[in-house]
Length: 206
Ligand code: ATP
Image (cartoon, rainbow, N blue to C red; front, side):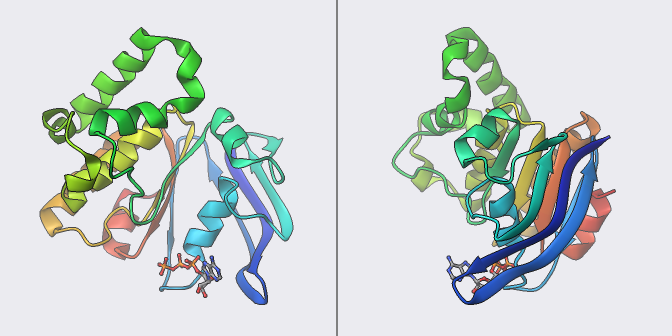
């Protein structure tokens, strides 16, 4: 069963064709990794999957539904979430507030359900629990990466997009991040991972 199908997708920035006709499939429960040099178009491809860059040509199908022209906020409701390159944490918000923002699409589900999700992420990343009320901008790079992943998971995605989670991190922290990715995979989550750390990425990927 296919969770994500990309058919001949092209994405351009004006005259620059950043993604030149990519096709790939991620089946349910799989971890698929995209490895490539700087500027190869990996981030652009992930942005097109979550609706942050428009597709010039081709189709993006999530869990059997064509969502090529669907705006980003509606794709979250369809089960797509991304941890972006460079983390993109809200620096002036606390760790807890960042997590609450990740659950924006579920804001009507009630405080108890959101608290349960936050506690689940604190169990996954205990360092976030210790820093619950700290401003995200004051976290270390590794902690910000954990927060970016946890924030994405707050929307209860069925497809998680991870853009270079190892970027700029020390080896020990990279190991923690990949352990978390492995646990998510073992729990059955479908993941599309963009990485430059080929060895680690291939170690976790199907
Ligand atoms: P990196 O690992 O460095 O992030 P990448 O494989 O993710 O590389 P992209 O960031 O997708 O590559 O960039 C693909 C191409 O598109 C590059 O040539 C880049 O300069 C260009 N590009 C990316 N974003 C924009 C933008 N907003 N406007 C114009 N060109 C862009």
